[in-house]
Each structure stands twice: as C-alpha cells, then as structure tokens.
Image (cartoon, rainbow, N blue to C red; front, side, top):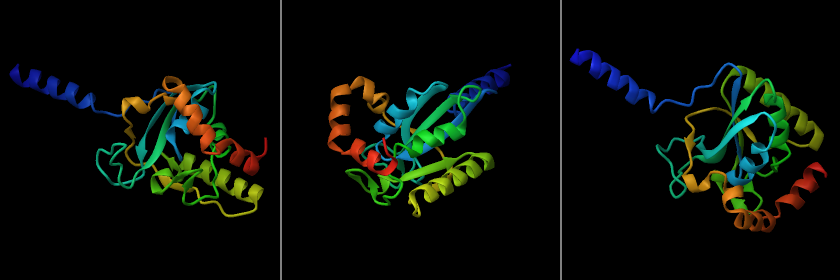
Length: 191
C-alpha cells in the first residue's frame, strides 16, 4: 500500500511539471518576433486563439529569466482552436507584425534575444513555415533573416510580462509608438 501511495504521489508530482496538454482540436505555435509584448498583443485578439504566453525559447540556457535569458529569444506560445483558425493564418499575422529583413533585432530592440524565428513542432509546421517564408521572400524581393528552427523547450516569462499590453496599457503604448514599429511595418507590408 505504501508503494502505491508513493507511486501515485510521484505521478501527480511529475504531471505538475508537464507541458500543457493539447486537446484534439488545439494547436500550438511558437514565434519569436522581437518584443514579446507586441507579438502577444497582435495574436491574442484573433478569433480562435485560446491563449498566448510570453516566454523564452531557442537557446540552451536552463531556466531563463528576463534578466538572464542567455541565448534564448523572446517568443510567444500560441494555443489555438484549429477548427477556427489555421496555423497558416497565424503565420500570416506573424509575418505582418515583424521586420523579417532585420537580422539584428526588431525596431529599436537590438540583439539576439530580439531576433525573429518560427519554431516548428512537427514536419507539417516546418513545411508551412518554409512555404510562407518563400512566398514572403518573393513578395519583398529579398532573402529574409527570420529563421525556421525546431522547437525546443518553451519557458514562460515572468507573470508581469503576461498580457502586458492590457495590464500596463500606457507604458505599452508609449513603447510601441516610440519604437517606430507602426511606421516601419507599413513601409514593409503596406497599410
């Protein structure tokens, strides 16, 4: 009996650290688009998106934080209802909210942590990401700096970063305006 109780406790303990389960009609997409506040804000409001979590991925540093993310990129994890929105639609919105020509960061955020990348979870996502990148390279007439990488562990950012555009609206709007984001995106993608 003691063995069974210990085993049950161990199972519950291990499940508490497991990745969020994805149900039959749920998809998961992970994108790095510079500042995760802005990427989160653009994707969160789409019909069919269940949740968007700001975080870190793409690197090797264990347990990154905002102050010590190491070689990770700021990224978002999107959980979506694939009966309402497709991965391809998420890619379209993602591309229209980044400067894929900039290998050094995004807008006035500079450095590797602000790089753009699509992190694929399977071969279907990889193929869709590669196709969308090729289409946008043709559209813009140049090679794009955005990378397509296999998804590694995704680490959620600190609580104060989640839904920042809603919880710190004034600061977020000043940041967004000051970065020149809107003007640059219109220059690249049009209105």
